[in-house]
Length: 436
Image (cartoon, rainbow, N blue to C red; front, side):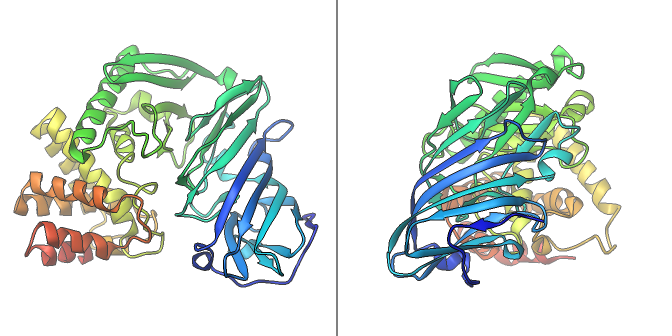
């Protein structure tokens, strides 16, 4: 049974996240403590100042599995405010009485089993506010500044999506400013389980963490460095924006953290890329890591279309996979590109006409890899052969430049942009994305 003790606790307050977006949150501090915690668990203290403006209530995304994720939750609130955690809605709701500006503090223990089981046998945990998991309260798709402190036992190392400084043994701190509210990702990994190397490329240093005893060959590491450099150069030129960008809060080249997870494997986490050690060591190519590098420009942290929206994963994933194939075509040549298209064709034909074969517009959650990653690029290649590869890649790059960070975003925005860039071909795009 959870121990939910509230300093001031309250009646149910219905409020949507959109109602809260006009309100202001400031002076946000977040302290995360992994010491004396089991795997997939941590203790969190946070505080912030709420300005209700003209609203009576503010709702923030918070929580995960309603029966498991949050325990020992306490609120410390000033006078004139009440607050309530609503597990089923993954919301924490605050309602004011008289005062417009109030200070709030929260303390709780958080359990996130996906951070543990998805990423292997406990060697690494990835904590992220994604896929319906919000381990700290926030207003998604808004900008936020916060002070963060992370405390770890001696046995764990830490990677963060934004730079943190080591302030003392086992203590890290920083102040990410004007960042996407849900974009703070942390990776905790057992220091003794990993081998760390720092490699030089012509575009900067690249850190690589590999599981000791599972390291790939030196040749594969050289391949990764060459791929990283080539992909950073290609995408940076194509999008007209370098990988390292103070504007986008990306100060360095990606760090690679390889894990032994058997399920959900490769992820772009802004400051680092987490990926499967087994795939890195054994796959005939490492093109999927170029896809993760491409997410620096196209993906959930830049193209803010909500899950559940028509074409959400056409926007978040298919476009990036196609641009990854364009990188392969540019860097490795037409034959390598055609080999990847043949793979797409082969895997898609295996589901064609079955219930798994859905239109791209129906990809509202990332639960159909074959349609998102195989059918989608095939259809975009058909479009490119009609209008020209250069014209399609520039249209996609222009869409990024125009819509990066804008919320809300919808498939209709891409369709309108495409018709503006390639007049008279919008109907072909819509036919392809709605085709069964």
